Image 1 (cartoon, rainbow, N blue to C red):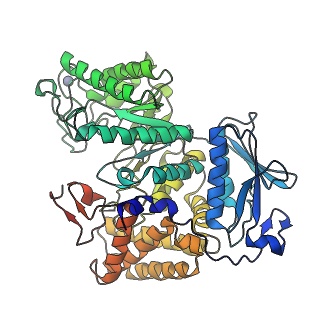
Image 2: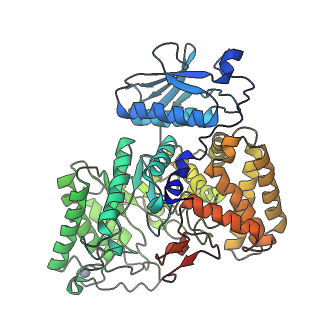
Length: 582
Ligand SMILES: [Zn+2]
């Protein structure tokens, strides 16, 4: 596959509609005549077609239906099967599906909410050879305010490598699930300064994500902290953190904001970043205390309730000179690890100020931090989380295909759903697409079960009649991953059963679903689990073919200069890293 094909095939995969024998076409209560069956029309009426996002929603609905069914989706002025409209009497983020004479009417409280409604409509419609519009009726409004995704666009992973068209399509798919924000970071930590030859392409990528988000009505978020370029002068660097629990990290070259030249350096580079985004958009800035950041000097410590707050406030004020409506998220990642009174310090800070903080983010490597659960959220700000949906029990990340973990995320969510109002799941690629859907729907409706979301996901992505089997496959794959994570022997019977069921489902899927990368990565995972746990290992022809296909889907490099690429590349033996692996 040449470079062009590699970069565009995801947008094309699944668009070939085979199996033109249409057993019948039911539209609402009408049944098409035999003459219409060769290419039945689905007529869509659009109110306010001049609105770019409403028109985009039509294009998305058209594309997703035509991908799954041999029908033609057309715009119409009269006699519509589907109506797309905005009803300003609805809450801004709510949608409603109802019947308007013979039509299904999808109404959003705003153009963005119309897109969420279109998602519900598409996922609850049926595509078994013919198109049967959704019977779902009702009104739905999200409970969570900020339903984000964090795309970690690095290491030549999918977010780093995919074409503009693929990224755009993928962000559409997430918006259909109710996601309303995406975060992408400008990777200063990998760059010398603004003149680094990689700075320009990295900024172009960030701007591309911001632009796509804007077109889809999604909020765009980025992060800044006190770690900036590699080339930062030595005399302004931070005092390293003690980090006795080895949880906070000392990545990069953090700067002390209490050294005046250090503060000036941080503000100037943040200004440059804001300036470079000012003609696109920035809706949210996220401040992050540790991993890449922190200073343990006399004046800054304890960082989380002292130097960090003062610096974040200054950066927020600066950001608002470029983006007057800029919202802020203050992360508390690794606060009080070890206990230093950071949570309590933040509570005290917000008792008499801190108006610049809009959201507080909390999460941890393992159990959710106890402080906000037991003491309430400092300043009563909305609390958001940062679930890790990518890496758990999974190395290389995505290296064996899909990593569905619905039971794990259900359990973690049940611990926090009474206090958490949204979040930014940490994503390294598209292989955790199932986890994304599950978490995005928790944010939409905190009591919606992972299983209910999966049922909708499976019917929409893989077609009808396979839901129970695919649920079982996912359950078995999660069981194997959990045993493997705990260094326990996996259950050979479970692995075998997942493999056999996946083969059986594959044989029954319609062509469009077989070609859907979402099915492919799940199917390949069942094959690779079989080979690595109970088969001949990762060098069998079946395992090598599966990993080669994953490498294509993720746009991995077979030979790479990136010393971190192996973290996101399937472990195919002939794939190499020229400069070693870190
Ligand atoms: Zn300091």
